Length: 160
Image 1 (cartoon, one colour):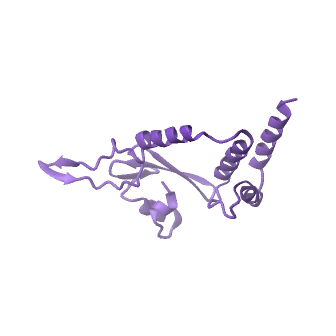
Image 2: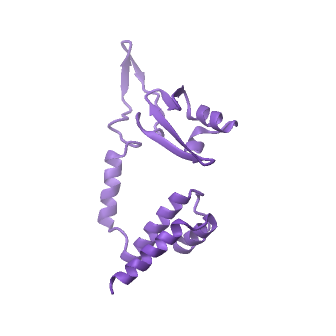
């Protein structure tokens, strides 16, 4: 009967998947001890709570594993990859020019996804600008403005 506790955990996680947002926030407060999860995204909350419940039951990662993960993120994470985004200057028309790419942006080719009013938005990061619904945009803010009809900071709207 050793599977019974595992089944209870799995059943609890699966029941949470169909819970209301208020129920998820209450469970978040219970397992993390924090009032606000900082997000109203149900899928994100469900995954975060499910991971934490498993972490409580089975234990978290060792310090060695956490260190290795941090090392791999530093080395391979496309958002922070120093190899892909060096601060070196690039020659343009025979002159050296500093690269002007915002370091907060993911690498070109990455897809930013956001659910907005029941609609899944997908924005492709280009070398210069962005593509949304087969249209080229210079900034994320321009895309957010077109979507919402109001001015938005693109980084806040998409949280890349």
